[in-house]
Length: 463
Image (cartoon, rainbow, N blue to C red; front, top):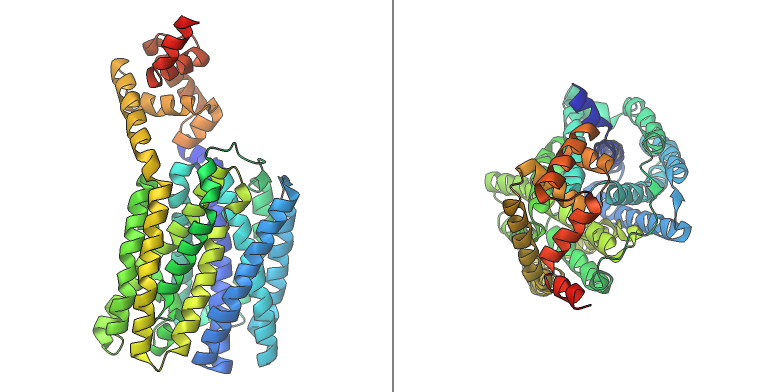
């Protein structure tokens, strides 16, 4: 029981729960507003307003959050987050309750802008609070949990709960809770710029932005999610449950190996072509449409973790939200093309096909520049690590502790990452030191460095 309490109290888990709250509330309000728009303006206008203007304003909100974090440099951003959440709650009321089309549209646009700001803050929080090897699951898992929660709420009264005035009784308290939860968990306390790990990371920023925009554009061409849900006569919230499964799977795969995550993301690009070919076939379209949502999880997780990793390596945490920002711009581009060519199916297929080739090429270039230069070095370092552990007869848990010692993590940070107590960490650290024949951490790190770079030993003896 104590172990589970420690896990839930860890900053990484707290951050994931907070992201689930933020995404759950903002996505639920967005879907309720979407239903209101359809009733007032119709399907086609709804697509232009929601996935066109709405997504652009979400991107603008994320850009505002990035600019704010960059300009401030450091400090606690919980106050700014609280203000954005309260404004979001305030504009949600007229966006969901008024009968005027103009009011619903205008307040809905403000809601989308604030949704983007909130997204910018929670993506930044994942970057600074969750270790790189757990970011995919923290992000994908929190999104999946929120999506399932919204889907379960949609089961109540045939989904009408989320589409009426009663929905505000759920949305408003949860919106108000976003800021205090971030403040209490100190989830937005800036650690300042991270140590720069790679000069290459920041140089890859334009290429990474282009890849994410193109990926998202190709993914969205030929398939507008909201209108497809409505035309199929299905509940949008429930139809996104395959998305939750995709998010969880993508998070796990990306944490296991980023390269595997990239491969799955690129492979999933073929699904829009299948969708385009089967749009008039009811049963196959429904199946493929569910798979489309499933694999969309890989795009969502990949574009978020990619920029979190770039932010980490470049030592610029404010870059973390750029993945979703660029994804939103690509979503808008894909939606605009699909709506303009909706009556010209052949032209739509041709444009999507032509866009696929530069996307795949740039994706491959990003893969080569981001990972291939490090593959040989990573393999060599892993071999040294495995040999060192084998030579000193370290257990599986002691290997995990050793890796974190070499990363200069404190006992508290190791305990949080491994979900164990600090006393247990001290026990494992003592065992590692004894088996390696070292008196302290510094001596252990020097011994390992000499194993990794044996030339240093020769140089020291020469001096």
